Image (cartoon, rainbow, N blue to C red; front, top):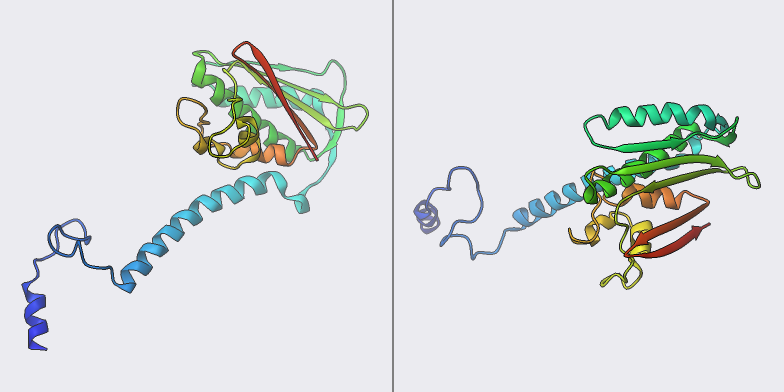
Length: 231
């Protein structure tokens, strides 16, 4: 109608650099269905990007259909892995030590999955220790459980330790939150626990989920705390 055309012509032109609501103009008007759909689609795309990264992280460790168990020589795998890991940390001050098995030690395992687990655990240890120490110390050992034949991974760092108090919102020990919840780093403020390096609690919780047995020991505030997880 003529009145409608006159009303549209009276609107001020959109500001340069954006098409959002204008102060004193459209700010109080309800969004059109198309605008609401566009906003919802943007939120879905943003969430999908995070989910895609998370799924890829899990698949790297849990693709059972591609698993190819073989006799893995720990006494040769560990030195090779240690050299590769240290080379990747060349720009960081790091005191890293890997304990080589004293004799030939073999485990029946998928080599790629084993190295992926090592990377996730060590990245978490280095990031955690780096937050508290100018020179983080990380120790790695690979042994074989003679009774079950499993590969036993031991990782230790000199960080101040994962919080051990009861989590305020999750209503369970913080240790359990960190080890069983994806993106657990986001559930703690910057003064308690935060995993950097892009892991945010994903790597260590996924390794825990794929492990037959995991024992966590925390030395914090003069006390020793432990928690066990098993299938």
